[in-house]
Amino acid sequence: MADISNLRELFPGLEEELYDELLQHANIKNIPAGTTILQAGQPIRSMMMVLDGIVKLYQQDEDNDEYFIYHIEPGQACAVSMVCSYKQEKSQVTAKSVTDVVLLTVSLDLMDKWLQRYKSWHYFVIRTYRSRYEELLRTISEIAFRNMDERLEFYLKRQVKQFGKHVKLTHQDIANDLNSSREVISRLMKKMEKNGWIKIHRNYFEWLRD
Image (cartoon, rainbow, N blue to C red):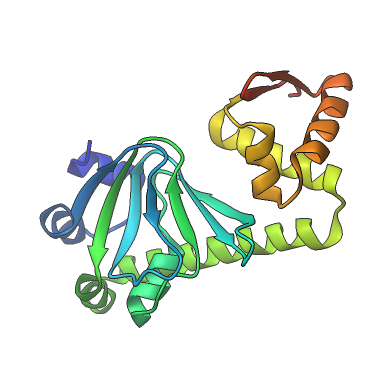
């Protein structure tokens, strides 16, 4: 899976020497679905790049309520791990594998070396920061300026875009991500089902709109 051609496809525009260094020095990790990859408060010693699968990032408050941040897909890197590994800080978020995941991890010393040696790596890091910053702005906007039914619609559309029209999420999973209650989410999803937007199944829903 992690050959040079696949890396070129997933992470285009890097120098040829950098592809070689990635394969030679970076570590490849196969992680089962449902695994906590990164825990809040854990020191970060490397940066994560996703080769396959989906990783979910979220925060937890003092009451262990979860706040969904965003997903990391194949061809994307974890901006949080970039920042924290570069500054040798502890993570403020938790990362969990939604599906089976293949990660490529890059150590701090390699990140420093590549930032100085390869312009393409410098631009890749900047693009990663920017895309995640924009994603966070969209999430904050949804939380601050929309009511729960609008937030739910926005959230479900993101899940459909990520996983297709059949999404394996329970009402409790969705409630956790939106920091709501299962009862509220169930009521709103039944309303969406009545309006022909979705069809609710056991432990998953089907998106019916184009």
